[in-house]
Length: 261
Ligand code: ADP
Ligand code: MG
Image (cartoon, rainbow, N blue to C red; front, side):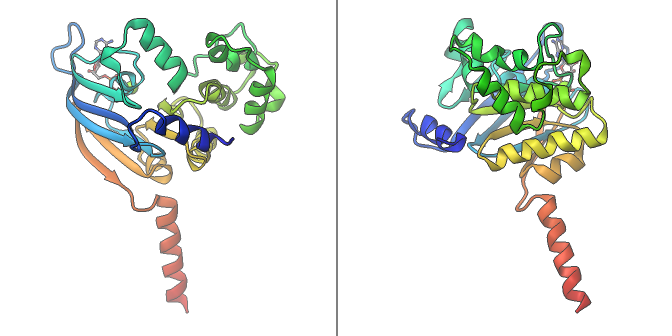
């Protein structure tokens, strides 16, 4: 069964029959000692299969938003629901299970364990799940991400781009319903960053739902189909691009060719 089929069946099976995957309702987040809220009344939904970019200046609340969707933190008020599960009703261990089974998370600085090889890093979430994590599944993912050859190397011997691909493989090993990425290209050079974004776009083409935080407008509009802008903890813009920029560029090119005739 391909990943898309797995996901569609998985989420249809929960009795909601909708394509909505994430629902935030009037979320606020005030950190202890925080003078103003990091999030101030955010409501939004994310549909299954969407590739959404969240943009905004530093400190605007992007990471906070992502962490709340991932169940890494809880809102001060409001409601987070993912795949029909109200995260507020989950205990700490329930939340941990939710993260392990439903969420893949990619960080700016990769967060690989230095004492484990690339392959061992990839297999961690599968092992936490208690399944006999097949080396084969991990190697296959690494191969799909174009880095089969570095499976047995330690992170210190990998480039930033390679490390991020290992982190992506680790995020995917449990076939998460939702892939969250917080500035995944922020620590990479332009070319590695482009490659990582192209990989995310490919995953999206295969049906993966992705929410990506970035402050790079170019990357966001080139690959994502929806751009949510946040300022001071509020959604100030939410645009579904009819076509991504690469398609817009095609339109411009075609028009140009028409004019040349
Ligand atoms: P962004 O990811 O857009 O840069 P963040 O979500 O990290 O923004 O932060 C939003 C606001 O919340 C900022 O003012 C930041 O200083 C504050 N903040 C973030 N995390 C914490 C924390 N753990 N404790 C206190 N304040 C925090
Ligand atoms: Mg951040």
